Image (cartoon, rainbow, N blue to C red; front, side, top):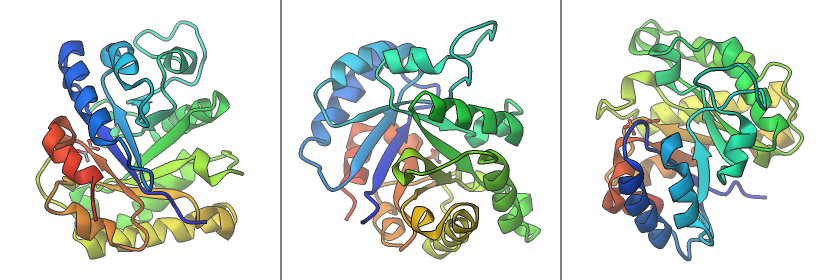
Length: 251
Ligand code: PEP
């Protein structure tokens, strides 16, 4: 069984509902007929209702940019898995570097979010990645190992399609700097080996590992040509229908 590539657009805190409607319609149109790859978009929460309408009947997958682990309760500012399911989400980005570094989300909190997503049938996209200091200090693999082990602590994976990992070097996110294809492959290979230690090799070989960090129309093909790169998590370039269309049509 081959890993089906997944191209994911993270719209971050961009697009009003009206702007999201237009962008989602263009992406839905562009993804028509693409059957050998999956396309996912993660608009802001406030745009999910309108985007759900626009993408109905298309093969686009809808994701949230975060998720709480409880179905309801006193969790001001959080969004529950049930609310996301109601809005058509089937996936949730978790542990994005902006959540970790701007909002102080810890591995322990991220682990709860991953567990919550899985419990309610949403596919978590667990983001991991080292800072520039950590890379320059030779600690990249150590950081990735810590984030994967802690993020997936006590998470049972029997179906590899039910979880996605995204390697996103922090120094490459929104900076215009991209990891070289060798750097990406090395990190992805390390993560896959680690997943094989945590789960079985047969599971690890089927889990999709996305690369994120300034992916654009000019670098997507070479990144996607790497053996262990199974897709891309795209920020800035996902906000332009033209760029994202080229990215989802990677060769
Ligand atoms: C991201 O938001 O996950 C991301 C990788 O952003 P950018 O593509 O803008 O670097």
